[in-house]
Length: 129
Image (cartoon, rainbow, N blue to C red; front, top):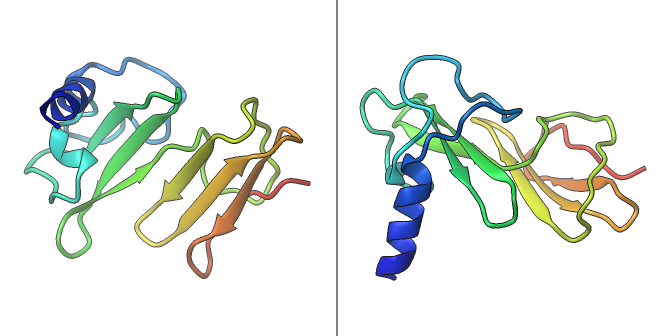
């Protein structure tokens, strides 16, 4: 358990650099994050976002939601909410989109497209053609 926490903490404190990730680098606060963004912990004062590299090659991009008690909304899909089909390369890999009001639970299909299930009413999630 201690090794996992150390690896997670190290991943959260690294500079994630520039990239095509959702929402990073905008607004104030840190975009390298802290260990709290990987948990259900409230957002620390002044921290608005963080990036957590994952073993499957995706990056979990977390934004602090300040509606009510501050909490982390994290998404690791390489796309935002959309109704358009989105291509993918690794069949079987999964990702999730979480915003302050919507969720999508997605899997890369053998046909090379993300296929997502809506987690909430009003979610806009891609489906495989």
